[in-house]
Length: 336
Length: 280
Image (cartoon, rainbow over all chains, first blue to last red; front, side, top):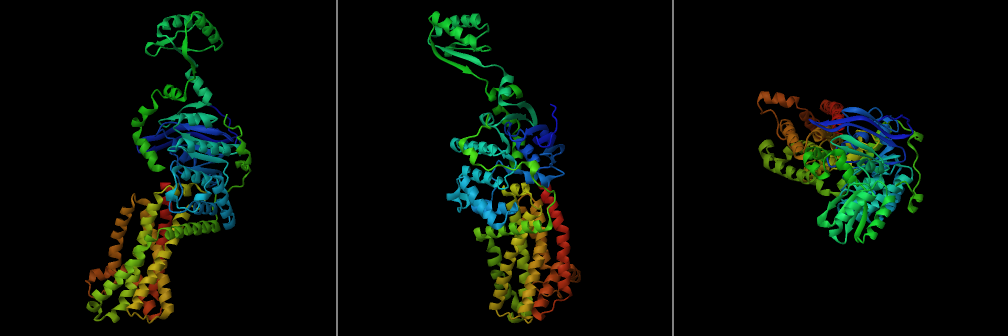
């Protein structure tokens, strides 16, 4: 991958980042380029090195190798500058449990250099924006997971940073809260922020990210838009379920004749699947089937999912990976 | 794909792009002080929210004064009134210094929470989360001081040094404990668990306070032990406190203790910050 380096264009430039914990290379030469004003998704299973990578970019961890720049500022030499440009929302809520939501936001505002009065105003503003006004005075111990995450994100936005790191922003949230979080993230981007988010949910990366880096065992194994990644796996496929399984053979012959490809048959389900290189030909196939008096129970087009992308890229499934990298997942957890 | 504006999105205020911001890579001294004070305010809020944290500086002085005065008073000094000028400064020093251990323990517990991750990602002075916590804890030392002196007064302690001498003595003890708390903060930062901080610190503190003449005159101790006592910084603090309370004189011991505290801060504050940042 070659890129021209232009300070204002790139929110994040990382070259060959390495971080080792003992003998475990948690991050093993990660390159990233995030364009200003976009959402960039870092997708990978537990323990792939996502949190460690973000920690290095956010000046929380010192890289053992490689370098990274945020808006052109080196994360090691100009760490204090970088901290003025970023907001970090961790995997676990990084707010003060013993204090109330208002007190948290007030303190973080003061630390960002706002005056006492401005800090109070900002806290009220953010609480309202994130729908936390009713719970403002309650101690955080009584907050739900979703409320905590929202407060956490609110705290990251006090200084209106141009770059926001979201480490697994929706892990452990219920579907409704998850949708709300997605909506908030989209709103952030529309106001000019750049967002770098990590996720282990394939649909989340698909939904939010303009570009995605797939990371596995500390390395970037693929990079591109969601569609590019899907395309790299192959074309869509046509799936037909027949009303009468006895027709399966006739259909297979018809597909080979009309579409010119080999179909795979699963007799138990009465289903037949064929790669679909040219959607135009499907009409013809359907007409052929009607002429032959074959009835369909169901018809669908399967696009490759990111799950398949992941499987193809890494050569192993998402689930089986958990056990293999359990040790590094633990390390990552203890850091967060 | 996702950059299309949703209806709500238009209300969000625009973000100033990174390249248009004025940024600096240094934190000034006034900023450092301001960050420290904000962090100290956080510490005070925490104390208000969890007053049970104050058990050690409220109950301990009461129990210790009562126990020591009535158990050892007659044996050591012949009668209780003549033991009070010896033991009250001693217990004061012992209680407040023990309180500074708790500072280290609580710092460890605090650092395990996610909020410290955020502190590290903020453009604030690196020392602020530590110095703020330590500064807030001077309130705990002040509470312990007030209660110990109050108990002494109730039992009949009437210091010859007058109110001024007692006040200066109290400030000296609080200042020195703050200095000493940097040692325990250092343990707090490098240790893995809060209970190990407690363990190491007690091991350091127990000999320091008991080999100081805080509770009993040292002239009956064996010679080698007297040498140890003479070089123990806590001895000087106890002697300085007694001198201030009983004669109102700010003498050589007081200066020596202040110097010692300054040396401790000069060594352990940078060490602690460095260790804290390495963890980061």
